[in-house]
Every structure is written in C-alpha cells, then in structure tokens.
Length: 63
Image (cartoon, rainbow, N blue to C red; front, side, top):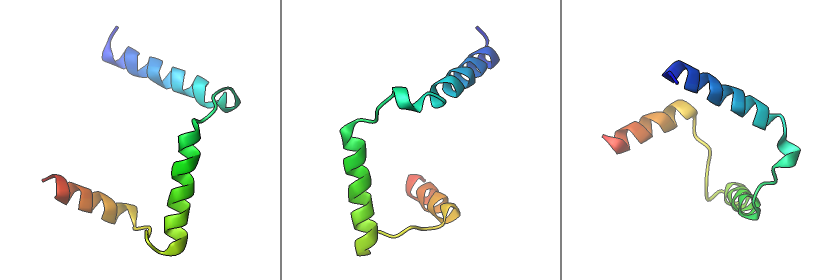
C-alpha cells in the first residue's frame, strides 16, 4: 500500500470514527484532567497564551 493510500485510509477511518462519538466513552481520567485544568485556570494558577506564542516557546525549548 502506498503512502498516499495509507493516508487516505487513515482519513477515512478517522471520519468514520469521529461521527460515532456516542459509541466510544471517554475514560474517567479524561474528565479528571479537564476538571483539574478548569480549576487551575479559574484560580489563575494557569493562563492561556496565544497559539503562535506557544509554538515559538516550544520550538525554543526544543532547540
């Protein structure tokens, strides 16, 4: 199977899976992580930054 065919298959699979969200339950820890992030954001311990700024910071950390 060529790379292009594999990518197309992945896209087709993702499209199919993403339309059936009710069939796949998120694990409990997903909710726990989201709740903790909400708490940190609400308390001011964590803040959102611009996506472009975040990418720049990550690139600097990795170089």
